[in-house]
Length: 235
Image (cartoon, rainbow, N blue to C red; front, side, top):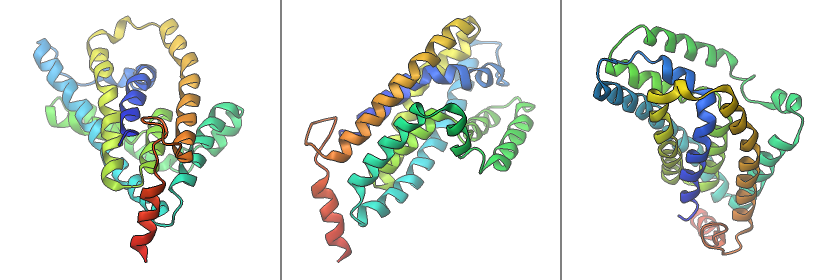
């Protein structure tokens, strides 16, 4: 359970990355801007849709991780995910780009973007929620990091909770972008991008420490007993 707290931290810190990636979408939303209350409600609906998609993905990848737990590989998969996260920063960008899942699902991404464009033409509260839901499916390095954490949870419910907390961590900054995004210049965005690799490497280290099961609260809890229990259930 301690590991869930890192999800909110990843989301909160990663939300500054969202300023550069999702900020333009948030600023272009078909909001009813005649009052701040309506603008706030529209922003909350958009972000609620985005977080709902994250939670659903967390449940799916938590289910995938449960398979590793039942096979006795929870610690191994956590270490492996941590190594992959660090390699994603350390390897040359061109090489990482070739490995990106974006290439494999590019047609699906194109369809999602087309659907979003149609929804942007509809000025209504439901359309804002569905724009957010679709936006949650767009490729994003920070979301991939969250998915890695959800997989490492090894449980659908905890995977959903992990991505829910990840999404809630991004919520405050993304709501503020709706009101003040035009004040965030290129210089600020570049500084944020420069700091993100450090944060990603740190989270990779956290995944590795968790897999090592060193019995350190919040950082490396003892998950070996849980793993063994999963193996006994199989028998």
